[in-house]
Length: 146
Image (cartoon, rainbow, N blue to C red):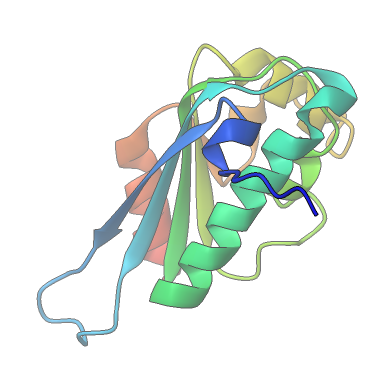
């Protein structure tokens, strides 16, 4: 039986970084999880493995650290289209804790188009209360919600 070694990184161009914010005066287990993703998300249905990778990292991190809130930092993620991103963004309530999304130039337009399917009256995704262009604003938001 032929077996070959594989890695997650070999399946996608997406890279990630995980950070935790722990605040003084809070219980030791209290934290806010920041997941930063970068790289090129493949367009259309070709991006399904990229979405799966992002979701897998997110699910694993949520299970390990059990944060009070989550920030998804997409400022360095190049995304032009792909419906699977709906689930990554929690468009149907898939994310069950307070969270914020931070956008950057490489993904803002496409994510706006995607979320307009659920909120047709908005001109920009950042009009939604949990989506931001600025990481500091995202921090303020999740701190209020956590």
